[in-house]
Image (cartoon, rainbow, N blue to C red; front, side, top):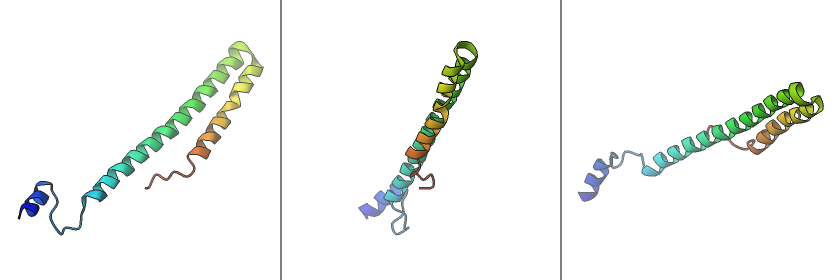
Amino acid sequence: MQTTQTFKRNGVEPGSGSNHSSAEEGGSARRDVSSLNIAKSLFIFAAGMSFLFSVYLWFMVDKNQGVFVGLWVPSILSLGGLLLAGKDESR
């Protein structure tokens, strides 16, 4: 009888088929998707900052330096694509 009351207090009915580990896995999956979105956002931000810095260099400092820094943009995005290629948002 003690066990049945413990299950009811925790919001889980005995024999209902839902267990505690599946709820924990769902929370973990949400955390993984969130960290994946943060990682993607950081790569996009880095590429955007590189682009803006290259535009600044092109117009204000030296065109060759602007071109050099502008070449970082596809490199940053490629690195992000490579590092995040095996990650799946649906898990």
